[in-house]
Length: 123
Image (tube, rainbow, N blue to C red; front, side, top):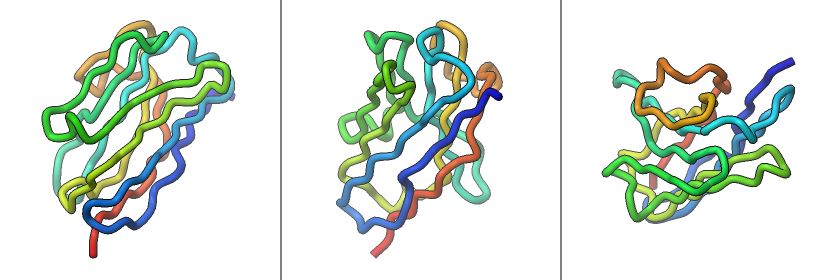
């Protein structure tokens, strides 16, 4: 069964850090670019970051550049998003998704999605 599962979300104070994970089962991430997206209440889903199949290329939204770092461990079939200097506006449900071969800014082009993990930044 093909499955993507996010974990690691939670409540963190402004300025704090959090690492969220995306674990795949039922298929190998070796052939897939992995994107992180987020959706806040009342807002559209937006792209946060993406990493190429072997990790050689990474992409970030301007709003998170310099604060977030995406990485992957293909041996563990897992992708990570390290989030530092978190701000209240980072509060959202974070989703990871797999797309064959290449990253895309369009979430509709991703085939496999997780159920999301809530990240709340608040004092």
